[in-house]
Amino acid sequence: MRYGRLPFGNLVLALIYLAALTVWAALVADTVDLAQQAAAPPSFPTPTVAPPPQTPSPAPERPAPRPSAPNSPVLQSVSVEPPSTGGHHPKTGRYIAAWLPDSFGSVNRQSFEANADILDEISPFWYSPNSRGGLSFGREARDQTLVELARSKNVLVIPTIHNVVTGPDPVPGILSNPTTRSRHVQLILDEVLTYGYDGIDIDYEFLHASLREEYTAFIFELADALHAHGKLLTVAVHAKDCDMCGLGGFQDWAEIGQVVDRLRIMTYDYHWRGGGPGPVAPVYWVERVANYAKTVVDPAKVVIGVPFYGYNWPNNGSESARGQTWEMIDEIIRVYGLSVNLLERDEHGLVQENWITYTTRDGTRRTVWFATSSGLDAKLRLVQNLDLAGIAIWRLGGEDPRSWEVIRNRLVEDPFESQRMLNQLLPEH
Image 1 (spheres, rainbow, N blue to C red):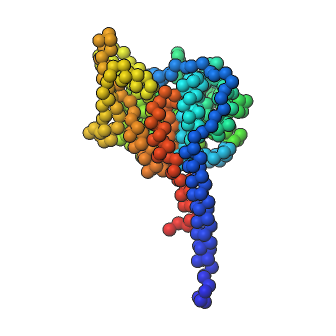
Image 2: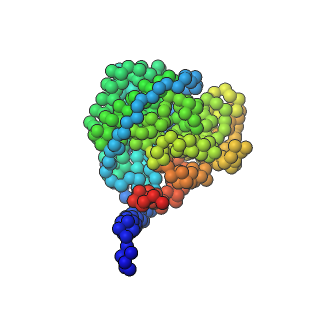
Image 3: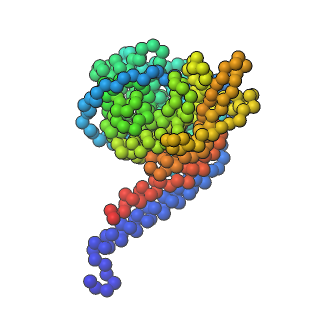
């Protein structure tokens, strides 16, 4: 080798590193700029007519678990190119999504406007399927005020289609009939395109494990249809730590994870309204579910659900628990002058949830469990440590303001995209 000259291979390697470092520097600068923007107080237009106040809805009732069936064969894997969306997402270091379970009233709007600068996606609970494969909805759906405001704040609108319905569940019949299933896909696509949504969120719950293949076929078909028009598909799935565990046997994460844009895991309701009192989302359980998810789905698609609600149980077991927002629980604490207890950990590991007990005026003894800001911070650290996509909040409106402080402190300065891009440019070593 002559002095002052590098071999061709070393020269190429040096150029790759130089390019990678240049990209890294630009991305870090961009991340710092975004963090400064996120820290600044947002400015929002004042509506001409304020919407009427809305009473926050509790978490939806959970039916009794259904028995699992043996595993079914799955579809052949295909690769679907994800769509590109406008604006910069995630705005912080991770995706931040939130479900909006009722209309865009004053309580929900206040929370949305206060945090739109860091929110990436909002999913209003607007639609449910009918037996013919069509969509049923109430007057709160197709709210162009919400769509336009979200667009002005660079928040993606991805409405939810759910099967939390009164009467027989139409989803099994839709999935089992290929013609009805295709009609369902087409009508969903028509709705997304007609009303200018950024995509759709599928929340089909409590299906029998024997529908595994049909559910997978539906997700593949819907993903293909939406992606062809540059629209997103997010899917809410039951939390589980093995393939056929719990209620999620019909959801084949390894298969649907290839084509969905975000896999939103409902890591809450560990103790639910139909069972006895206890932590709603203990950290040790969330960690177990997240670790399993990472083994079967690209971590860049895995979104961890975080509860902004609690459950209020009667100690005598006379009725199911009531789902309550933090504001409702805080009112109980103030009215009854209660002390708040904290369960930091139990024999299984880290828990980090609050609980209170009190006696109502009719003599009923009740117990309430609800999330803590420290528990939320532990889950955000878990998302960071496992390099997952982000969080999905159930539910927007009436939550503890300290929760948003935790999210901002933990996620705003988390430049994971910069590191990922740098890793892609650098040669293996």
